[in-house]
Image 1 (cartoon, rainbow, N blue to C red):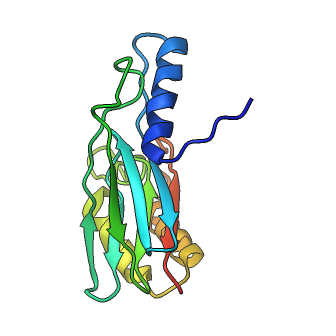
Image 2: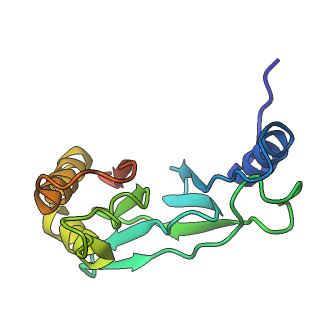
Image 3: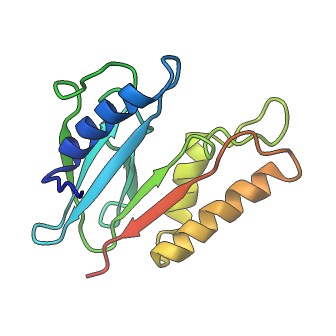
Length: 164
């Protein structure tokens, strides 16, 4: 059967309950669920202990980390009172970047990591391109930084851009 959810918050609360019943006690998972609201030009998002979404403002030329919160899934049976949905205005040219920690925690050697500053600089540097070009530019920057050093964690990246 199919269940429909009205909000990303409802979906995360339900998913947490299912995962908590099925997973081993010492396992948890972070995530962020986002939903584009075209009628009001806002990105709604619900955090479950995940890294912050990075929002690039085309008008200001700046990046900010959107608020985080919630709790990683599978830690407690019910997260309904912990997770909440927040919204960010997306103006023409604005970019939202969702990523896993394998990007800022990518290593170039045994002591140097890519870091948030490099990630933010990469977003700004590639911001004039399409969402795909921004995505590809960030991935290239991370890979160039890493060189031949082995990848220690997953690298997942989603880039959205308001174009109309």
